[in-house]
Length: 261
Image 1 (cartoon, helix red, strand yellow):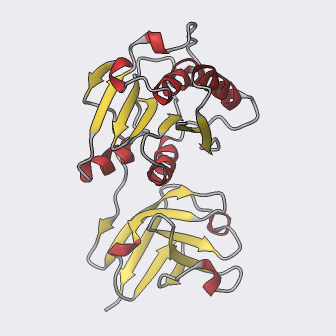
Image 2: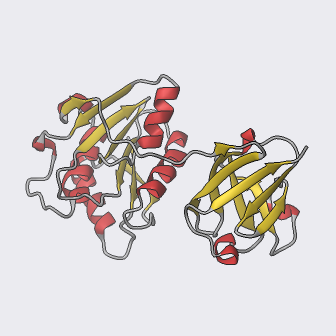
Image 3: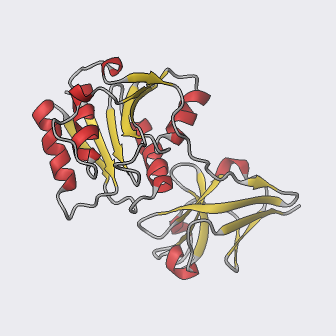
């Protein structure tokens, strides 16, 4: 039994995810399907890439991940499949796999890509608006059923990569920015918490936070706090509340970290 995960921006209202599952089970009835998320903001490739990169490493060898955040559906953008380490990925070639590719490269893991140009592994009838059902779901199912990556299309070595903003070292500390706002209204930054040393003050949208707390519960309800999130990045949060609402925060807002002494 192969685990096959799904990540999309489809939501669950309209049945798009259910249709993909039906396609998968028609081809590979033994696939164990896991929903990573279907609440990625529409067309938000950055959120999709971050979410996928945070979740996929916790799955085992041979897992097939089908990820569809596809604002370019029906255009000339490629559909691709990849082996990154010991897992497989099926996605539009729009940068959705950027962080996973970079991690695999930094760890010197096996990496292979194919352009999904072998229509034998698609549905028979292809629409220009739902490649999640017509291409990505069946290709993922065939991978889960044991079809080799090499049979799915032509080898490529130039997948599209997104340009993720990096935290900047300054004379006084760091300048970072909000890269993700989660369900709780917590503000994830692009600054790894392990890079922050010493006594610090954090400035965001007119507010000041002293130091990084061990967890949310070390402060009273309503306090604005900084923590290291579960992925190891600096996060701004409100205890039992929403930092997004409290600060009227948005993706890209500046976070300054000042190191004292």
